[in-house]
Amino acid sequence: MAFIELNVLNNTAEPILGIDLGTTNSLAALWRDGRPEILKPEGHPGRIPSALYFPKDGGEPAVGQVVRERALVDPEGTIFSIKRFMGCGLADVKDELESVQFPASETAEGLLQFDVRGRKLTPQEISARILMRVQDVACKALGGHKLKRAVITVPAYFDDTQRQATHDAARIAGIDVARIINEPTAASLAYGLDQRKEGKIAVYDLGGGTFDISILSIDSGVFRVLSTSGDTHLGGDDLDRTLVALALEELIPKVGQETAQDPGFLQGLRLAAERCKHELSLNPEADFHFSIPDQDLRWHRRVKRAEFEKLIGPLVARTLDACRRVLSDAKLQASDIDEVVLVGGSTRVPAVRKAVEEFFGRAPHNELDPDQVVALGAAVQGHILSGGTRDILLMDVTSLSLGLETMGGAVSKIVVRNSPIPCQVTEGFTTYADNQTGIDFNIVQGERELAADCRSLGRFKLTGIPPMPAGMAKVSVRFQLDANGVLNVTAREESTGAIAEIEVQPMHGLQDDQVESMLQASYDNAQDDFDHRRAADLKVEIGTMIRASESNMEIASQALDPESLADLKDAIQKGHDVATLKDVNEVQAVRDELEQATLPLAAILMDSVAKKAVAGKHLSEI
Ligand code: AMP
Image (tube, rainbow, N blue to C red; front, side, top):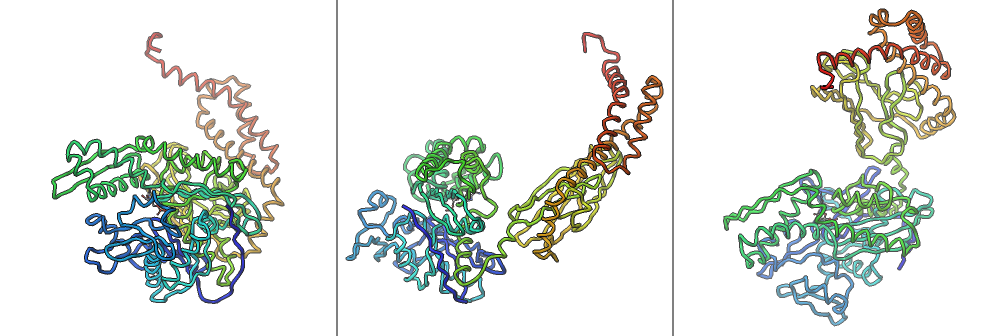
């Protein structure tokens, strides 16, 4: 099954919301100030659980965070994952119905409906409630401004009936659908992949309850779904279940079979397992805590990430089986894929990311929040449909490299050109001279090899480095570029914690044509730049060799034969004069001669170090 999304523009000035109507959570985004943004009222995460709670007394159903809480005390009144039933008839979902506690029947029109505590509701009507809540939250975030039009996302495998059901849900909610788009397409849009002329994209989406893998092709800005696969019963909940099973092994002997089957008990344990799983995404070990104060139950266990990875191994392997199928359906190999995009909260699990990277042989895009990427992409589509352009989105990658001037005037690139932003890169540096207590940093922008040919964005100094031999200090420098293009550079000396930082705006005052000409200059000067850089690096190396030789001159004068000593002095002098040399071959010759001339001294020093090491020791101890 393949869907082609037509790129028909529908110009209207009214902003269009992007809504991700998810199986587990739903959220809205809007294009604002040149980029898509998740709509969150103050103090609210913006994300709404896609679940409803029906009170026992038949009162109005509750939507949102409160449902998760109600589910703990009254699980029978809660309905989750309604998306699985969208556009389905009773016969289509016989097996699925086992997971829903409400009796199901069909309407006169053949639509599935659930009998929830005295009222009959179709999945469309239930989804409409979720959509209304999403729209409300968006409205609050926009200071009370209610947007009526929306782009809504659906899984790529949704057929026409399921898409129509989503349309109907929106209509019931009073939302005007500007377009229904595929979730993987939205994720690709969020990453600006529509800017590619052509290419093949794999979108790996592991959410709470479902797994989808889609292969898209992009051709002149138009996405086409080549194949989709997945598993509608595989997701983060299954990862949680492996931990729940682990806990039950120890808990059943304590609480008994009956309590262990209690829905409230299990729900509490599931939430505890999920917390532990989240912590394991950050740390190599995590605490798995579960307590029921009324029953005086307190249980606790440390879980190692490796142990968790072993438990989930078969589940991750199942997702890769689906990746193999989807590639074979599209008649492609993993190596044909140009971009891999991660979607869904469960792609935060390090073992999942690693498995995907190894399978496709390339690092997947994960710079955006995997829970938000679909809504962000829907907002991009909304912006395009309301007549906007997205040139500005090109700013989502750094258009010029950012780096530091190193000794000798060369540039060490830290954030390379075309890195997606926001991003963060940390690199280690050290001191050049003995007892150096400060380092001057010059932040530069551009593609040239020497700092003098780049744009200097700012300078700052790190002081307070304790005196120590050259090369011993450990200074980590972090470049952090936020979504607004603001660069924060922090330098930190590890042993004392001394810190210095600066904030600059790399693109401030730069016009597109200036960026172009900076890039052109780097192409035009590529060979010369390479030679200059090499010469600068060689000069630094020569400086280090001279300092090492000069500090041992006394030993050299006593121990070297006159000819070697004269050669060494001569080579050191030439080394001192190298600053004026420009030709890289001449600098290389000076360096090689110096190296040659230091060999006899190096041999003597090695010898004396070895002698010291063995001094006073019996041969058998060596
Ligand atoms: P989604 O359906 O995309 O909202 O994904 C929800 C799933 O992502 C749930 O199973 C969450 O437990 C899981 N999830 C969210 N954050 C993390 C995390 N940091 N580590 C592991 N799983 C996570």
